[in-house]
Length: 629
Image 1: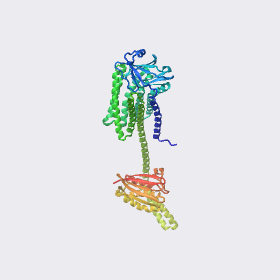
Image 2: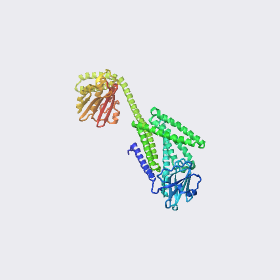
Image 3: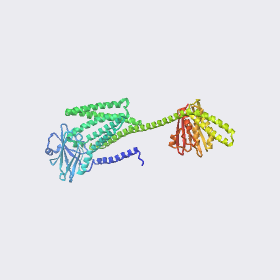
Image 4: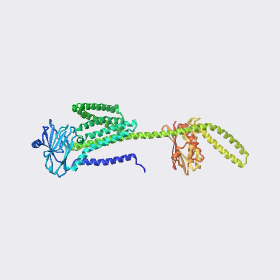
């Protein structure tokens, strides 16, 4: 069974993940409004912090201000630290409940029929809390009073108030509250998995993987600690969430810039490096200020919040503008990593901006959800960039392995050639002389013999001549040097070779076709050049079948002369191609393999290269590349 392409498989998995995420997010957004939404409620700002519910009920109607879900949240008057909210309940059935999107204040209490039905005390409720109060059928038509006190934002309700069946509102409460926790903990889990994988990487890859771990982990902690659902879980330990939120932010910003720097470089005039160093110094300053503030029992809280909220927010804006601008520049230069980075960040920015527009158009009653998924998409783009770097290094390693294998094969071939060269040089001269003497005596004996013996003598002489040719090839292979160096006209030399071999090609039922440019010149020995191409074309002729054709083409290519000899013969398979040039390897019945060995050595002596291309049954092409004069 053939496995799918890894890129196709990854795309399919991502599509399946999004197909699971989008309906879930859409269900949460669609739960943001329903027919059970109350049209309005009332607010009354109080001056006394210890005002009782009886006093709030007895207050005159002129003190109450009517508010609708589409109104902006009322601005808290100066010197006011508490407020009362009055909600008129509609007629309801059993197993109903009241759900409020967000109530601001550190201390929140709810009263129904002057009885306390809900209470929450949290000093770190900066993002507002969600309230779900169970109701019975007898509570219909009553008025619910909510007292809220403290906090850093204006007191009151943001969003909508809904009265519906308890099970349906509980589902909305849990989905909206746990969304941040699910996304945040998912990012933290991804960071842990990446960290474990990074431990098995080499030092060069570990740094990039570890930076991605820091970015993903910091984003996860930021999302979790920013959740409005967290205060109801931590209770009095909300300050711990704030500490982790700040630590994650101090880690995220310089890590993100360093990750960008490692991928795209330091930028013009080292701007990215300088900004990253500034961020690291400022993060250390904020961390020191946080420690001092905790040791002084939060006496520097206002100054600390200014330095870590207002000032740090401006630094974040500058950071994103700088990095996105540089990413767009790299993307314009067709840097694939920059295109992936820019795409991921653009998706995140578009989701965030569109939700902010909808948030302000709806009078700040819309609940922001999709920006978190955009952030997840941005993290995925960072993971893709890191994965691409791993892929590039893997491809480089594979390419290096191929080159190393080719080098080893060439080295082995060179060693074989050297051994045969030494053997040929030491034996050829000693063998050829006795052969010539023997041939001479056989000719003398043949002249004095009868017809039958003379026939045997001629066969013996023919075999001696064949042995002499082999020995000559050995000598040529052992000493491929070009004794006479001259300027050769490639076209004229190839025409001469074609004229010699055309009769042989005709006997095989084939023709030689020439397609030669003029003015092609190389440096070499005319005799050796002819010998090399006679061997090449002769091999092509012997491979021809019916209606054979050998096309010889020569042309200029930059600083080289290219010569192609292509036939439509029987061709060769891959294993046969790899063995070409080996001693004593030949596809011919009486071949020795020395002809191609000699050809290779002659072309190497002329500082050229040889390339073979062939398919079984389709023919063979030999391309010789020689330096141009």
